[in-house]
Image (cartoon, rainbow, N blue to C red; front, side):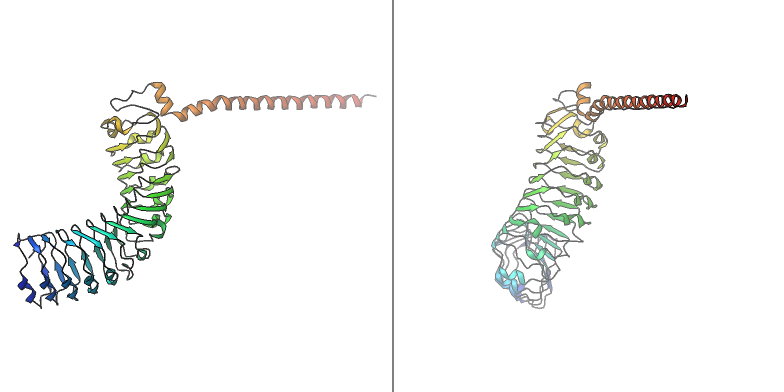
Length: 410
């Protein structure tokens, strides 16, 4: 009976339908509490009450539904904590409680739900730790618990959970070394761990995630360099490593991410030039390199980045002319503020002079011009030395001939 604009409460008399196997009231306008009598539906395999206005708590009697495989209570106004009786639902395959007003600690009985393939807890007010044994059966495919107040480590059972397809644990207070939290997931296409308190180096093993399309680990305490292995994530569309403590240069291997549309490396401690190879990412739409310690000029390869719609390179040590592309034409001064000496197409920015252009964009030419006289002097010196050596040999030869001639006279 989904999508029928039904109003009012679920009648308690519904509990007398003991042979009922499927109850779907999703996407209606039902309200009030979920009645305790729901626990009388002992044959029920599917209970779907998503996207209504149900309020109150989840009834304890729900633990009597031993044949339940699907439980959808998402997008309501349900409050309170998850009843401990939920641990009795040992056949449960899909559990969706997202977007409610649920809170408190998760019951330890949730570790008994070993057949879960979908567990969605996002957008509530849960606290405490996530269930650590949630993927012991290697069945979990979709695990989302974003936008809560979870603390402690990422569940240890996820390390070997090769079945995972999508993981969202962002906007919590999760702690621990990121290397100890992640494994190799051949099917994973979405990994969102941003805005937690994870630390350590970005694992090189992420490069083995050939199906990964979105990687967001921004807003943690990660350090070290960006691993070159990320360039092997050939399916990546979205990469956000911002707001960490990443160091050293941007690896040129990022050029291999030819499907990349969004790249954010802002608010780190990155140094060196902006690799010209980034200009070869012809599908890139959003690029943010702001608030780092990048220096030098922007390579001419960026002149071909016509797909770029948004760029921010503010608060670095960049200089020289800006690429003549729409992303800068349509930008404000804020996206280049706080640099050493940029000039060019943005209004309020100084126009580039020939001197400025050659100083910025053509630093390599300046180096060549500096090397030419030095190399010229070296070449001339070699010619002089060579000429002197030849002359010296000729003199020696002449002297030798003269002496030989003298010896022949009586």
